[in-house]
Image (cartoon, rainbow, N blue to C red):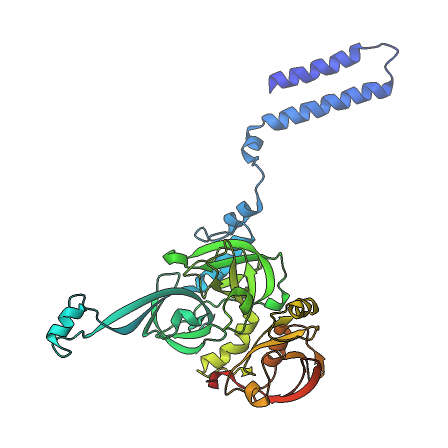
Length: 416
């Protein structure tokens, strides 16, 4: 401190000794001010008390850690925050199903031995096998209601559900809908409220949005993968499962066996889909059922009700004028198609509303109840949004003629 003071006075003395005419009063004043600032800065910097009180700047995460519970995990970004909030609601589902099969005996399967002993000389008694499966799900009600895929729990004799905290519960399959690939499981013996996953609005999701898949792929519990929404409204026919009635969310977030039934999250941590389908011939492509579809059916499934789907009973594909023109130019074509947009009937199933109404193979449906039909998916959506037993007026082209045919939809679950 004495050394700093002596330096200060030497600076002041040098200023006073400089009496040259070219330095104005203002210049001298400025030098004095600079000397004072230097003195104050050095003194404060060298103070032992102040030196101990100086701390480096802290980040937002550090401030949270300093005030929060030391055992609490603080998220680092939107992904970890979403997973921290929803992760406890994601469960692992292990199933077991008994299958009885005839037991093959390689010794007595020899035709010579079978002829020698005769038909009653040996027996290939039935063999009981236990088929085990695994998937994911997530809690949608604090009483222990789990939403998952139908193919995860369908025909299961036993269902064991494991929570993220390690607790195990036996589950009862309340409802299964194969067409939408949705199912509901109720946990037994839940004594305290369970965490619930927040259900979002899949209609608000857009191509390019973040997509976070959570589940238990290939037996690896609590796995998280990240991607984007690649496309919306990918039809089940395009995915390769025409037996379903779904428009999937397509994502490049990794979805592997065992992910089925787990949630697909938005960047805000809301469930926007249920991971379900995988194409073996495509790399890095996964599919999820939009959560809005599940929300419209979950209450019926909880009550154990069957979901009725209206249907006509035809197999169809989209027809364009160019496709019809190419067909008509082919001398080997079995029929002439009208060169128009519409839904081309490829097959009419027997004992269905379409068969009873007189719809034929090769008909092109171009309107329903006065609404123009441009492609097969549009017609499918129109029928799905009607009630079972509702009467529809079809406008179709058959060859060079336009016809009106009335048809009444039936319930798909009762189809032969």
